[in-house]
Image (tube, rainbow, N blue to C red):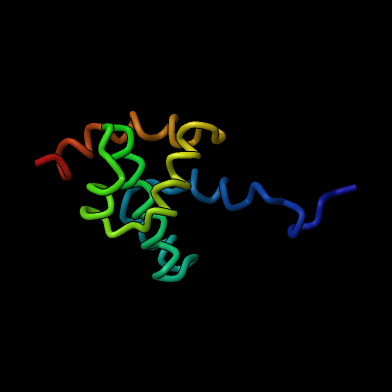
Length: 102
């Protein structure tokens, strides 16, 4: 029996893999997510990069505006999560070094 579209949870992930540029990704996520959801995801990636560098919570809070709960949640994911951050963060290093390092 064929799965119904509502049962195909991989459709979102397949959609993301079809994007070919940062601009395409930006436009797709802007259509898919609310401004608040996008800001939260952007903030979590930034927090993860700072945690990976060994920055302390208080300094991350000052730089990103993230709550201590958000920082703690990201840290738990880095330590005990599904390795999603561990997969992507090293791939972001060149971009991070160019855009975020002082």
